Image (cartoon, rainbow, N blue to C red; front, top):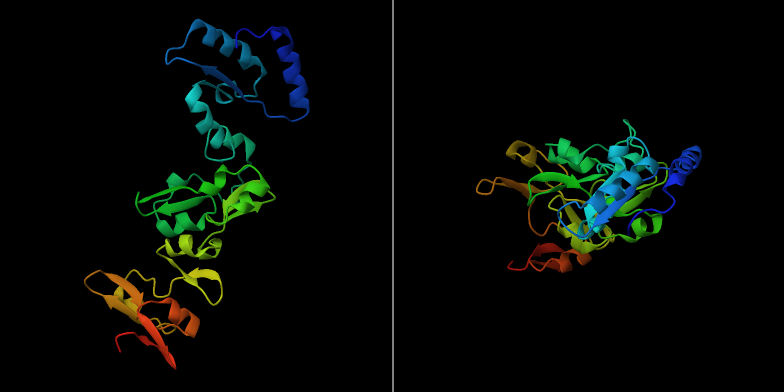
Length: 241
């Protein structure tokens, strides 16, 4: 609000922050789309205290843009997040938009492939800046990476700890008897791989070009009973049999 009264102290304050290895960001919040002279003056006053490169450590934002900017603070792909989270080259996370392959996307703990968008996007886990908030997000299968101090998703189906998000992933299925999410059997892209599976009883649909486990192949009565199309009779069989 208005001019900073002790602007002469900003440069010295910045030096002290740098000695303490503090990364400093700044936001000028304006009320109107157009940049007024007051906004520009505030920007010029703020720039000397933010970290280098200064052009990437401050924003001049409308009030309703601030929340979205702060939401991405812990995201290594955002302009500010890349200065907070040290991304190791062998460490695993890279910009999600770089992945064109679904499997490679989902294997990155910072990314998730959205079938609806047909694109690789940031996992919602990246929005959590604290260990507590990260661990409490069980729906998205988040975990706290202590070395990098960032919230990632557990890669693969094991990251889901609840039936609904697990079932919403076409590559996963929920095992009620084990109370965990596992890779869906028979998840193959072609007929040869599908019919060659010796572990599960898989069948290929020529109409849908999809591979799926034959119905009612559940090994336990609990899983069988959870499938409305099946009944347990010494083994799991179709309810119409």
